[in-house]
Image 1 (spheres, rainbow, N blue to C red):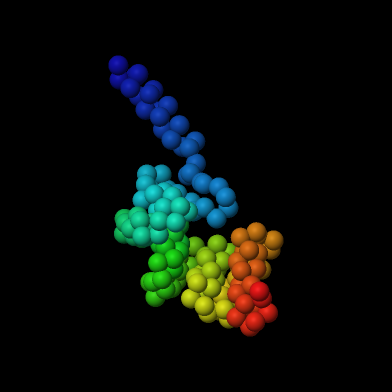
Image 2: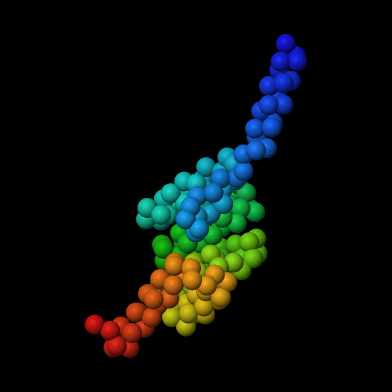
Length: 158
């Protein structure tokens, strides 16, 4: 009986080591830690436009694991969509301390500045993101939105 229990434990441990951390596509999806339900729920609410619920779940995730860079990025994006730009900036700074200035954070932060109407800062962040990930469609789209906004405000658009 002990040998059978030991064999099943060894089999379970081998299976657990083979399971990589879950990733969700597309490329902008955050990395999830096993058992990190709040980050997963935050992501689901963020992509479906439920920014208040996303903020709640991401906040719980960062309170549970302060080193969860994905949750900090999602929390910052949620705050930006809710118009809490002061909190978004704090969360983006924390995410950069954990994850480095990667193109996802720079793109999201640039979009946050776009939402506030600070086109100069938006351009600076989006161009830095584009240097790190040339040809990325999301960054290119955000730059196109920025250019369209500038054209509209300067009277060059429809």
